[in-house]
Length: 413
Ligand SMILES: [Zn+2]
Image 1 (cartoon, rainbow, N blue to C red):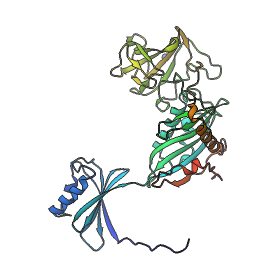
Image 2 (tube, protein in one colour):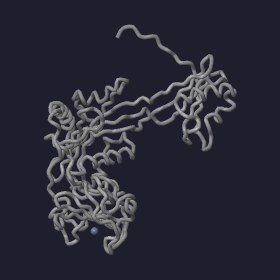
Image 3 (cartoon, protein in one colour):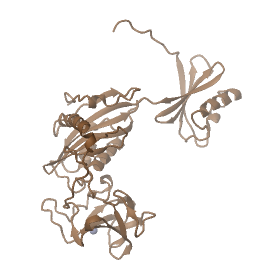
Image 4 (cartoon, rainbow, N blue to C red):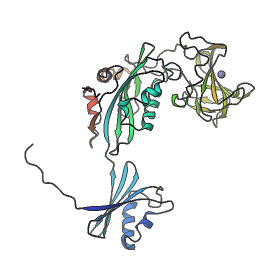
């Protein structure tokens, strides 16, 4: 490397960290530390980035002093976890800079075999111990969003199913996750592999997930009207035999969930019923293309603005779980019919979604190879792959490790 650069040694400094109390202002906090003139100069500099009057309770404010000196030389105000206003004393007043918290991109590799419940397997996966409990839950939400057209995690997961996924996340220096993106995932459900590969041809964040053949994972119907995380695991398989697929007389699917849980329309459609029925309680019926209808029953309340004739899109919230009508506890009763005939929502065979646009096929092919190789470098059912840390850098050179196709080598125990 040659000659070392000269080292810059910052002056010894002491810092006092305060949390803004309810009703307290930045000026109030500084009274006593600064003269009125200096305070006015500091607040003027601060206003270049934020309003000193509109600061959240609990905002962290750091006052910095030179050691052996009583004069305040700097103030840091953490506006959000990602932005800090740094105020510095200059010879003729105060100046301010907006500092963005440095972010690192790392890539998590995880795989596992499911013993009973997907949630347990992911939340207790040792590969994910670097994530907070809440972040692990967010990761499960992402998996659910990606596979919501293919696999109902609450009803279709079987012992022995396996998963592998590659998850890219933005991490702050304190280890908290700012954002995360699932790059590639595989789920082998009852022997059938399902894939979801992220593809964003315009690099604008509006990408989508495709299977290995370049078909969108999206379908006309979601398999379930609730997110997996909100479904209680008891109850939903009660009337549905997992192996024989016996569709019992009940003719609907019951999902237990806390009262108030949002209910989503499983497909685009039009509201043809919204009201109270004796046994269904508050219920909504949607009409969809090709003779399909769906019913959502026992709601506590309807979503505002939903009435007969309203058009809804797949995933729109239409109401909230309750126990109106004939229900012994809060749950959603969900039915699907076609030309009046009851269907098991899991057995409906629907055409796959749109393929990768033809203009983007070449790029898709390249990215698919890399992302598939990443997935396949994770041994099946194994516990943990290692984490690759990469500096995001100012040029946004993100996921260098993923794009260059560097496989996670050498597993950790
Ligand atoms: Zn029911």
